Image (cartoon, rainbow, N blue to C red; front, side, top):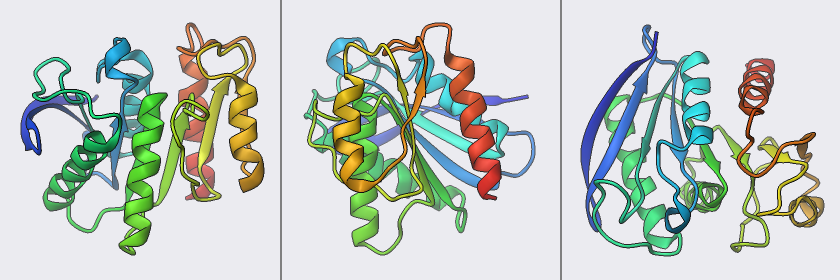
Length: 208
């Protein structure tokens, strides 16, 4: 059973409305989840973001997500991924203080993949990278996606008309990154959410 807790964190632009999803047993890791674009209806309650959070709790992680600036109860206004990455870094510091010594996973959907890939670049520069990334509906071609580590899990919908599959291939190809394509899935993975959960669990456990 998943324990859900709402909380507020003081961010750079003011209050951040947050959600913590916890497993029953002591967690084996920390997962941070980033939601899709806030100017197009993206919130931490997006179905893909919720699926990613529940997936990591199933894997034994404590999962945290929050509404980006200007969404729901979060203060501030959209900052094109820059301030949002700052806020995600603040969330990471908060979670590391609560659960010291645990490995960290970063997961995001659409615009959230840009935020998490930027955060991973910062963490790599600081010598403390996340153990692994899960990027769903990767925002290639929409935002300047940085390179990501080779073990990153990339999941994309075959029929995504928001971020075309060809754009993701063009971004992934120079990095020699495999892309998992869900046949028949659109950008929001309607009726395909179970594939995301099953794939992440399978690939994550294989790496343990």
